[in-house]
Length: 360
Ligand SMILES: [Fe+2]
Image (cartoon, rainbow, N blue to C red; front, side):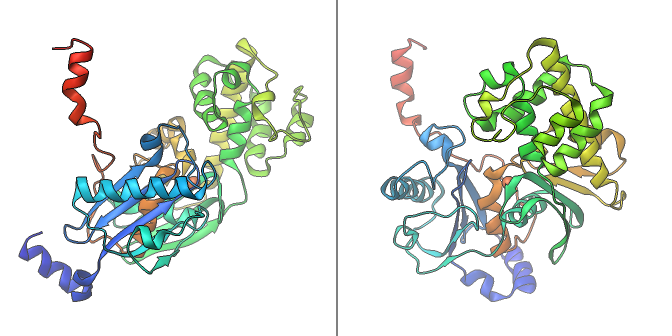
């Protein structure tokens, strides 16, 4: 950071900006992640813990006892020291509002302060806004749910993020459940969170069944599985408990299943646009939350609306610790997290690998 940068930051944020110590932020739910802010360099780093422990969708708070949690957090802390020069001297540990941990983080991060300053979708919104090129934007955050609902709309501006609306719905859970109806999707998914991506991929092989689209559209708002079965006449099973074991819900396969996939996607798109179309279409748009991994919707927004659009590289819960950091200490500039993830931890073994595989 140059002296010119320092003067600009002082004029905006005051000298206290430079007295702040390092920050660390933890999201412990599925796709658990931890982010760091280096106070000396004003740089951000983030670790998706599944890459460290090699378990997809890893949950820090439920897949471990408190000793294992501690070991993982200590490893992340040590990576921050070793790889990014972030001393173990933290102003605060931020813990996401719906991703508690059982272990005590203060000793690990050498601080007395543990704070939670925002809710689930607020952190989604912040993470996306400060990575985006926009100073002002409409922000849509939708997913399978957090402690502040499933679908929230915000106005992001120079001084912060204003909440506009909470829309009762469950686009994320509803779409996942649609995936569970199809044999090829259910049998090829090793985790229920993998159902949605596979459903989206299968859409291209199917034909939309127009008569069913309005019923699937409603399903993403009410998630009433029994009502969907009754209105469509489809032979859905596990009507009373579809969430007990989603992998056991499948009733369609082959072309019939592909058509259900395409129809569910069409219903999803109709539902999403019924919300988006109630807002000013001229303002730049940011889409985030796990449902913003639905690139088919994103592409339609891009093609149908003549407006600037930004979707962050990690709109799912892997971005929540970073968003929490941004809400605790608002960034002074557009943040770039390209290559801000886990370094190659086994790079010192490169020669061993070359020798083992005779790769030279
Ligand atoms: Fe989320």
